[in-house]
Amino acid sequence: MRILPVLDLLDGVVVRGVAGERDKYRPIRSQLTDKTSPVEVALAIRERFSLNEFYIADLDGILSQHPNFDSLRELHAAGFQVMADAGLRSMSDAERLFECGVDSAIVCLETDPKGVFLRQLLERFGPDKLIFSLDLKSGEPLGQIDDAVEESLVKLCERIVQIGFSRLIVLDLAAVGVAAGPTTLELCRSIRAVHPQVELITGGGVRDLDDLAQLEQAGADGVLVASGLHNGSLKI
Image (tube, rainbow, N blue to C red; front, side, top):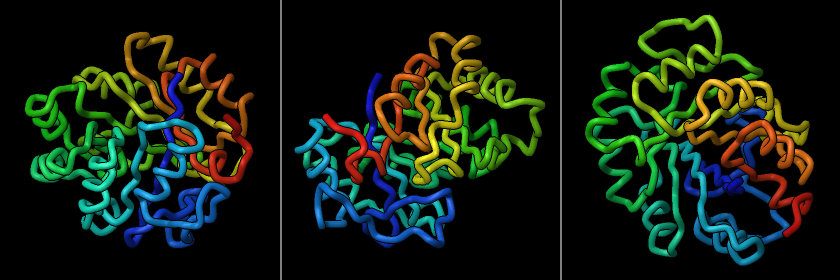
């Protein structure tokens, strides 16, 4: 199972995400570094934990459609592998992300995507370069595909896979940064039971090695982690 450090970017600096309340996000305070620029924080994490693949939540792109392209280029130039959520809403958005050296572009349920757009993305870039993020808050989906309301989260995942995605992120924003433990265990188990071949990444609330072990047992291929790396609760 891969450990994927998370960098939440807002106004060009790394911030601490807490429960998805983005208006309350503040520049990060870390035991690893006193810096807040994306590349410097990433370098500090790599130096301590030897982790090189990062999940970037570009809130400037998500909220105001002004992604931090320069930061993405700097991360690529420093040798990091990057999966980026920058509020992708168009083919040109995806093209610009890949031009910056992003390895995987994330398309989110939060943006209420259309099925035809998702299929166009897959046809243009292929399923290995794209990840669908099933965005939740307190277990409820934060968006819809084609304005359709699915009867369950598992059914919604089924539709995403049928469209052609083979890589999924399951993220409950209400659990982010509150150190209450992972809330997606049952959903991960259910998805894994139906889709054994899907790459499944999850996150939110991870505190320690016990949480990581539970998520691995639930079928997660990767886990998004932020606070546990910075506050010292996760060691090498």
